[in-house]
Length: 467
Ligand code: ADP
Ligand code: ASP
Ligand code: MG
Image 1 (tube, helix red, strand yellow):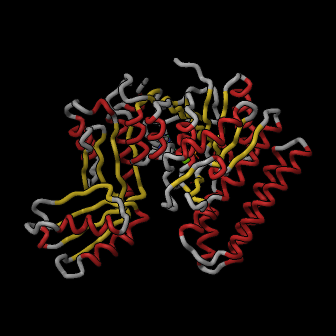
Image 2 (tube, rainbow, N blue to C red; image 1 turned 90 degrees about the vertical axis):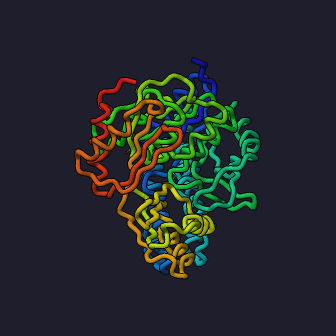
Image 3 (cartoon, rainbow, N blue to C red; image 1 turned 180 degrees about the vertical axis):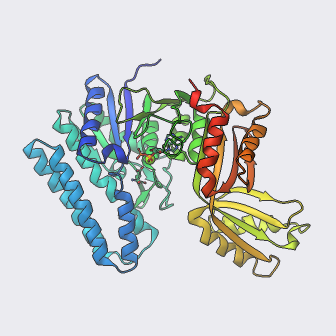
């Protein structure tokens, strides 16, 4: 194994949720740094803060300024209490309280003046969580004797496109990040806000919910890190979500592709886009538990490396919705599907899954739940000429995905999946298998998700794996 000289360590929301956890983060950082490793820390907002910021935005939108200010007070009290509990050095304490106080001043000003609710101002609002946690984590690291500075994603050089709410870092970020971060590594641990980037015209952008993982791998790619470590609240990447199936097992080693498939279809522990930058530079990604730093966690490696097992995991994505387009004209009229796809593409809506019945006059499309109302509106406009009888939707559905690179070329897996699901009398609404045969996905009603995950986990013996 190659030696570890440079590592990016990302700590998620629960890993910085209170004073005790922030001290753990500082101690983990200290251990690596004092062992001669160059460390870059990427932080999320303290858990729950981004949700509160969203709530502030929603209240402001409705003109409920008082409620918004009350939420800001709550965030401020929590952050200031945490600072007081974490920092023992008086001078440092004063400095960080002052700095965080200034950020709150800016947040209050924004809340006061925010009356145009364009995406850009929302991203600016959402960025405050990480802008508050980074100075605290950096001060906690300094407090135990490790020199540290903190930077926003913008200061670190994360330049993105202008897709507010789910921005993507541009290639020029590589050079910018290198220039701003590398010089800091000789003498300190830079703490960089996750989730935040900056468009070419200088506006703050955000990389999508859970996007700090993506920030970490973007930074890791730019500075040629030896490894990217994602610190979280579970033992690694598990065979399924342990909060749903308690006997889920930690996968010791899996391939980039498998990790991507699992995260794309709901394994929240990794942001779906976070593996791509690692693949580009072949940087191993490790997922580790902040509560148990000595536990090895999961190592995510290049696809060609030998990883054992056929089925590796099952995941569930609940934030999806089904749209059904029904009309007798669908059978035998060419172009209706193309019109539907075109209308959704024009509205910037991604289609996750498609199914058309050859005998039934229905086209079913699976979209992100957040896009549902825009999708139905776009389709109703497209088919306002009555070629279509009905457009219905169902947000109460989930996609279940079975993942494993060994599934390709192993016959009988699909049969086992659907027999096991059938045995539990779970109705399947839609099925899809990627051409890579790395996954089989199907759609069911939300209220059967737990049953389906438990059943498939058992069917493939995932509670017994040792790889
Ligand atoms: P963080 O705040 O560290 O970014 P997240 O909440 O984004 O953490 O992700 C961790 C959570 O992901 C876990 O607590 C777990 O419930 C959930 N999860 C879903 N699927 C998986 C999986 N396959 N392996 C591990 N965790 C999973
Ligand atoms: N704070 C952001 C969120 O809650 C980003 C992250 O935690 O990764 O979505
Ligand atoms: Mg996360």
